[in-house]
Image (cartoon, rainbow, N blue to C red; front, side, top):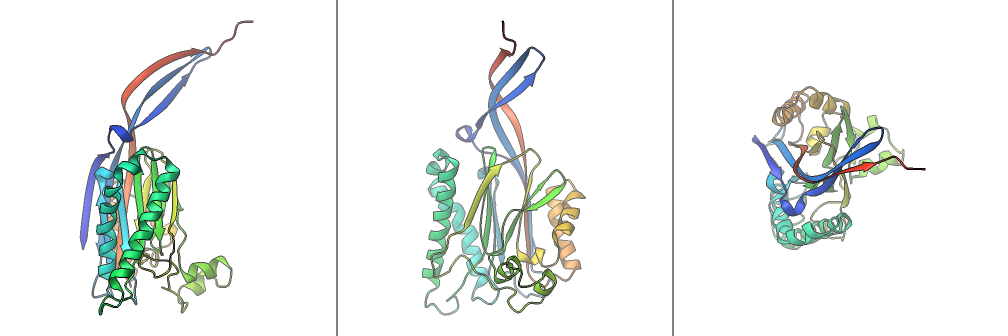
Amino acid sequence: MTKTLVSTPVGDEGRRQVTEYHCHTDASRTILRGRMSGCLSVGALTDTGNCRETNEDSYSVVPDRGLLIVSDGMGGHNAGDVASRLVVEALPEMMKSVSTALEAADNSTRMDIIRDLLLTLSREIWEQSRGRPGIAGMGATVVLAWFVETRVLIAHMGDSRAYLYRDTALKLLTEDHSIIWLLLQAGEITPEEAVDHPSRGQISRYVGMKDKVYPDVQAFELVPGDRILLCTDGLTDELDDAAIAAVIEDCTDVQKICDSLVAEAKKRGARDNVTVVLGEWQSYLDEALELEVVSDSTEG
């Protein structure tokens, strides 16, 4: 069992965003312009579960750069633990190597850069494993959250998931890249049939594929108090969204939430490895730049 708990400011002067705060009266409005900074509290836990002998899940937390990553070495593939470890170790270094471009870029360009990095990583893992006994055909899922300025960027390949918990509501942000998900979306099977379906565990997109397959990437504005949950299917195979939301709602400490989610999965069987990473984002105005009073009245 591996556990992580950190709380740290994220970003530097170049990544702080100028934000306007408006205060209205009957005759005028006050505009305070200032720089927004963020503080990210992170909890994380990975566990082998009740049935597996080894843990093929991996995670990486780089809180000062606002980066969280979860990866699941795919069941049935050789050296899944090697593949997931490569993903969580290589991605932070790859992002660091292009950090200047990432921080200078607009949101759309950042999404393109992350998409290309994951495609490059997938190709490199496939090349490394090709024809090598013991690791040929290795692959892994990936889901990452990158907190930058007042936004978060989410990217994923496979069936490891990202959730947003905001205002007591849990929202699934990702769509599983799996045969089961496709069958469910097409209405060919029911959720009840999916539990024991023969295609369960078959992934349609993953890191290490021979084919050129891109990840899904999205980004959105954060609200203070937002929590981003990343997890492997070892959690979601045992807990549905309502059960996950109930655990998050019941506690304010991010590490205790992670501990409780894994404990609940193990209580329900934990047939697979279980990994959860939870980041809570808070913002604060750390530098007031300008105060302006604007009259809303007009003279006739």
